[in-house]
Length: 239
Image (cartoon, rainbow, N blue to C red; front, side, top):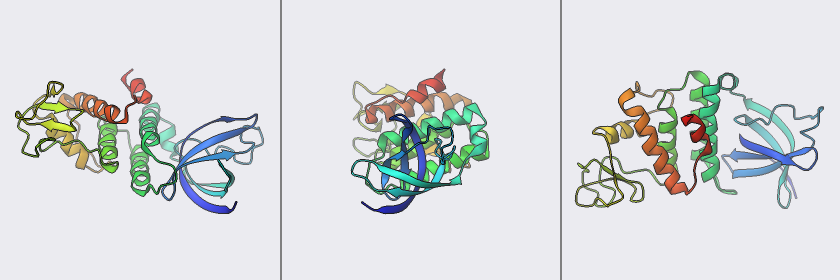
């Protein structure tokens, strides 16, 4: 048992016992942390609102056998503008849910942490582009080693002139490699996805209404296929 310092972004929390909460945090140093904030549900809790989702916090933790206990917490970034707008909150919720699904406990997650931080900062600074969540999910797939093939065939590596895309095979397929499960895409859509995958989240290109919706649909299906789970926050965005 020991005291240690850490930092991270709060992903979610849930009740634990009569007055406590388990707070799930993404740390750049230790990956996904499951911590306990004791007494946080009491009116006079010393933690106040400092452990709300999306908050970047600095922590002092008491290491336990199963869960670390938060003994001190201070805010690094609150992302207050993000919280004042429902569209931004919904987009942030999708980012956090996707990160929560792929983050591992006890493993350094600096790239994943920095990606989430950049996504939240983009939401904090401006109204979200229709393509922001799509670009975020494409970058998330790259961070975890599942980036879809967009410029070349996912099977043979040759230039993919075909308009077919396979979620199982990992991206675009040429005519020689296409499978029965591959879907037909609108011409230019894979190029559009490739631009989003390589763009800065804070400086995305002007969205193209012809492609934005389909780009989100393809990216969502690709990510959900490889995560083997649905992202519930994306269902809310659809509504």
